[in-house]
Image (tube, rainbow, N blue to C red; front, side, top):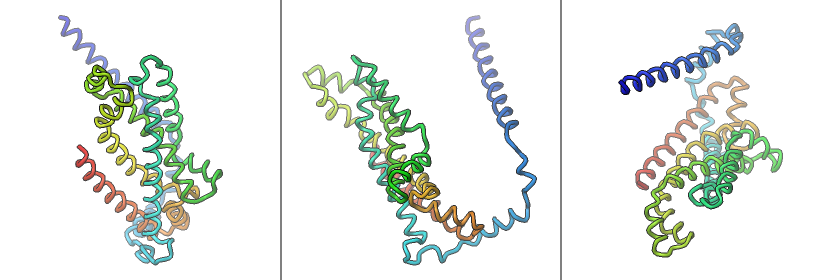
Length: 264
């Protein structure tokens, strides 16, 4: 009898979740303004697709520094440097945010988590706009935007891994008289370093995609030529830029996957 009641409760919870989800979807769909559909033109859509099917290969590389290859390398460089800065600075934030390191002072971990939440609350594009005003347009603003945002992202992920780690080796070292930093360098870091490295590689891939859009606000990279080409309806140039971004992300994803396998 008890098992049947428990099963019925589980079914009711499932149906309630389905109903609430369906209601949210319907409410969201009803709130969208569909008036833009009246401007849709099949012939215009066909022109766009025809343009995208004819990439402008002359933009691929011309040695000017403003071609696809040069701008993609700049975009990858922005993402790599921003992620590297975030990886280094996320480590002290993790030490502040991990509750298992501050059992006697839990409010310290709460402050650290709050800092992570604030840093990752705003997308890179918002940070890019701010840093373009602060340091001027260019790749440096893009590096700062990605770095600051990913400090919050990596800090949160690092903290979760730190709090979920196996405490057995730490307890064993503490039992023989090891201090905080000895536990950190000989028990915690050896366990966590492969995971931290994998998370950083994953966020480097994400940063490459993010850096591709930061040029929209003057933060360097491939984003500026892309938006200019879209505004000018230069679809063949848009096509070659999109192909370049897809190829760059694919190569980076493949290499990062190989490295992650080596870290396991």
